[in-house]
Length: 97
Image (cartoon, rainbow, N blue to C red; front, top):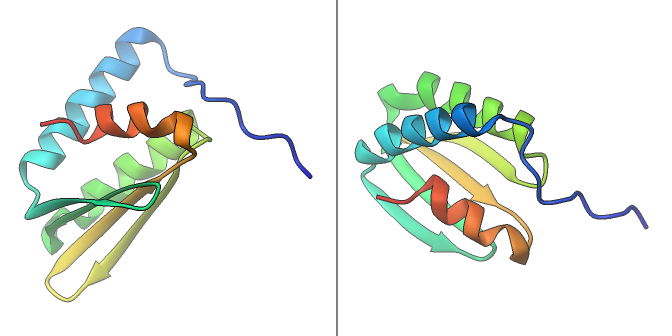
C-alpha cells in the first residue's frame, strides 16, 4: 500500500495567502457551499467555470493531499474538494467566508 501524501503545501506563505484570497473571491460568487463526506461541494454559476478550473488546478498542484473536481451541472459548475481527515482544516480555510 502506498504511503499517504503528507499534509503539506508547496507554496510560500505569501503565495498561499494570495491563493486563499482567490478562493474567497470565488466563494463569494457561490450559490451554495455544502459539506459532504470528506470535504465540501461549492456550487457556482456556470460562467465561473474557467476561473474555478484554473484555481482548482493550481490548488491540486500545491496541495497534492487534496482531491479537487470541477464539473458542469446544468446552469452551475460544481467544485468538489475532498481530502483525508487531517486535511479538513485546510479545506475549511479554502471555503471560509
